[in-house]
Amino acid sequence: MEKTIKQKFEVKAEDVVNDDAYIGGTYKLGGNGWEEKVLKGISVEEVCKMQFACIDEAETFYNMLAKLTGFSIRKNDLKRDKNGDIISRKWVCSKEGHRATKFFENDNRQREPRSLTRVECEAAFRIGLNRKYGKWIVKEFIREHNHKLVDPISRQFLHSHRTVSNPEKAQVDVLRQVGVKTTQIIDYMVKQSGGHEHVDFTQKDIYNHVDAMRRSEIKDSDTEAALAYLCGNAEMDSSFFYKFNIDEESRLANLFWVDSTARMDYACFGDVLAFDTTYRTNAYKKPLVVLVLETFLDAMMNKKPISVVTDGDKAMRKAIKKVLPDMCHRLCSWHLQRNAFTNVYIKDFSSIFARCMFMHGNEEEFEKVWHEMVANLGLNENCWVTEIYGKRKRWAEVYLRGNFFGGMRTTQRCESMNAYLNRFLKIRLRQYEFVQQFDRAILRIR
Image 1 (cartoon, rainbow, N blue to C red):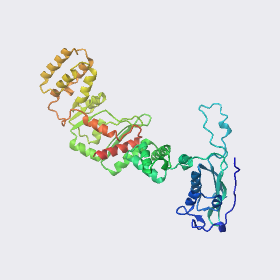
Image 2: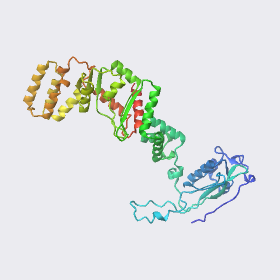
Image 3: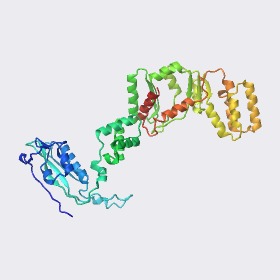
Image 4: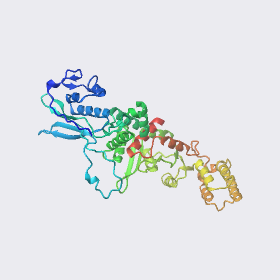
């Protein structure tokens, strides 16, 4: 092992060499300054004569030197004067020191210990404040290491060289706001930089930044952030409506919101409602559904629709009977045909069932065709057939004729809307992200 060399000295004004890289006794941060010298191979003597305008500048220099050399740095000693002002700062190799013995003596270890990373390396860089000139001068520089240095291809993964710059963070934030996945953002930035070897961060660094931003956006709680977002919308849009309630444990139970455009659309075209219980949930397993009837009517100034098309959800049927007893309720023909196929395993039943559903005759003709089918196919004891027959006034065309449905027999428009929204609403979205992404989806479709 080579013997380490320590060089301690005080830099005086006359020690500053006559070099274009110096400005008022301090190396420039660009052009022909110390960055170029480091790239070419700066000597110990040149390092010993360097001065810096601030601590951050010195840290940037030593970290650049470390990256080119093949090691990582970390902060070590810090000294202050009696007024609390910093007068000395030291950085060391990340392999400085040794692992505390308590970590070796742990008899209750549940996992294998991590590999040793500290090998008592003495490489260090320390600066001190020269009060006379207001500059930071090099007090100590130990260049040699007692361990193998990292190859150039892997140096970017060393801890002190992994950094996400402010412009990169801003780019990540903007892409997240328009719904781009974090993995896709990383792929894009790597492609933009020309490959993984040209970026100064890892996938974990980007995920850490995203996580930190999400935590900062919900300073109090996720729910409060979501409600604050909706409250802000209400302040900008006088006709914006939102309502929520909480459960026994003071947690958000239900949340409903609608903007002025949707309310105006309903005022003009709200004669028929299509409702589907297919939904996309968020991180809290809360479903997104199209409407909640009582709150919906409250938001729409109590204008009641003429008719509604649903997929057969029992809770929705119960709500319709309670809140809108006079409204004509139609069951979705697509869902009925699918259920017929999955509940009755008899050839030709699905096609005959469809003919019954859409036949143009009268009620008597429907009853005749239906009972003949049941008898011929031996379905008298089939529970599903018996149950669906009891609901015939909500799906058979002969019983629904004369009611206005806007040309709709199915909840297909809801299904297509669900598919569209799924592009924006991801499973792990938090509540405040959920409402923001929903608004973005609606803005685009409009």
